[in-house]
Amino acid sequence: MEFRVLRYFLTVAREGSMTAAAEVLHVTQPTLSRQLK
Image 1 (cartoon, rainbow, N blue to C red):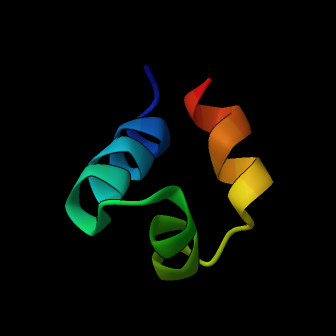
Image 2 (cartoon, helix red, strand yellow):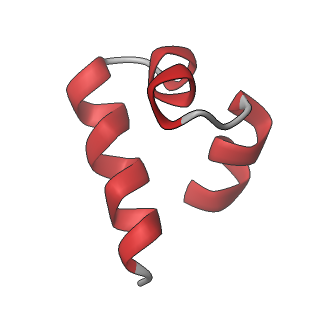
C-alpha cells in the first residue's frame, strides 16, 4: 500500500465522508474513490 493511499484512507475516516475528505485533500471525489478501491 502506498503512503498516499493510506493518507487518503485516514482522511476519509477523520472527515466522515468521501466528499469532505476530497475537499481537504484537494482531489475530486471520483479520484479519491478510485484510489481507495
